Image 1: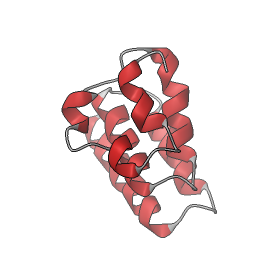
Image 2: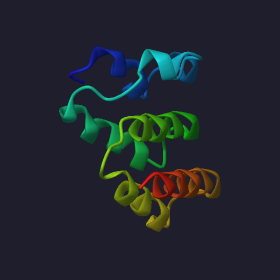
Image 3: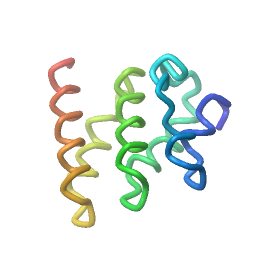
Image 4: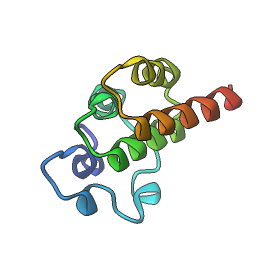
Length: 101
């Protein structure tokens, strides 16, 4: 990633505790470089990745006011391979983003 602070979150080979640290909100307050959005969206859409990491990506995209978040969440919700737990997270994020619009 262009922003080095995103590297741990995007590293799917790392332990979850290294990817999502307790201070993730203050450590990565928002996306700084637009070039990093596709990397984050890939994590969001990856049904084999950790729900926790994917949820933190969704939180980061919301904090960054990413304009394509609603569409990305709809793709998650439309994916038949998506598991119920993360589908519910995506629905909550979609509702929250709709309320902010």
